[in-house]
Length: 190
Length: 169
Image 1 (cartoon, each protein chain N blue to C red):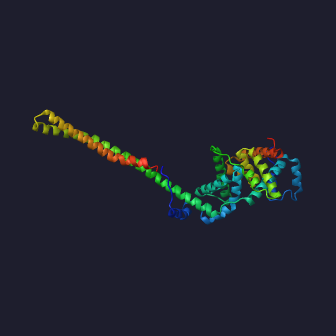
Image 2 (image 1 turned 120 degrees about the vertical axis):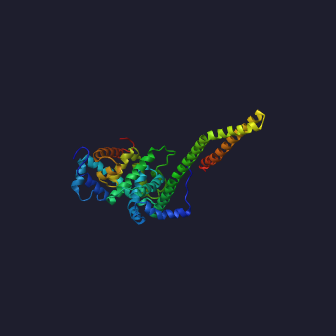
Image 3 (image 1 turned 45 degrees about the horizontal axis):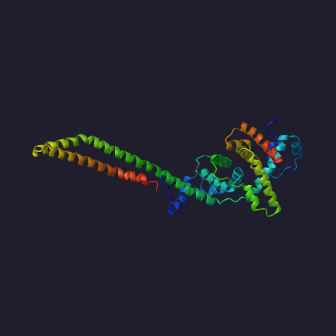
């Protein structure tokens, strides 16, 4: 198949065309992005352990969101849908064969910024948490983060992850217990 | 309370996430002393909340306009690719139809060509006394018709083959 490229004029035209193609206006997107970009970026970073990959997936998440034809009842519904896209992208990425294993974000941060005692302490805590999260399954990481970092209800998490609320309670219980045991005993396994 | 959840869990999570844990609610704090579920909720939520708060402050995200712009360009590019896909199919189908029509035409015209050759033999035969000469003439006529047909086929097929050979560049 011949590769299609865009001229500069076509790129400019894309900007005008976007509001017809996407499900929201640029102004509405800006407002929504300001509310959600940081939580989504942190979530992607914690789920992948790779900041560069999290940046790529952030762009991909918003692109898929803008191209979707879903109807939203509320801002919360819209936000849940965005997290669902992000979760699916992380899982898709995990299924692909990996060419190289990037150094974990926590390690990069720890090497890059131990300027003062507080940041060194934060970096150490981050490494501990990253190592603990590494022992969990991807879905366990997602639901623990959504429940205890984002503060979502069981129903919201079930919707975002595409599981039944009844199953979610059992999954959350097991994941929480595993993480608590690992955090108490960082060297061992649950 | 059941074995998987505690009725106080939501209140505890809410207090931790708002930064108000353990706060004024001493009864709730006391509850976590003997409720294993709530104790684990506190342990996990405090760590995740601290990490989340720190990361939220530190994380750098591109500006909204940049994400919008990249999405717009990508949408345009994908639309352009989607638009060229049917054209490629159309070219292939057109080429197949042209070849089919050409072969059908040759098949339909073949009896006429054969008749023409036979007629030429009849006309030339009496004029030339030597039977071998008339055989040679009719043979040449048949050959030249076949060569003309092959040349016509090449003229149609060659551009089509050339198109598909170069379409990846």
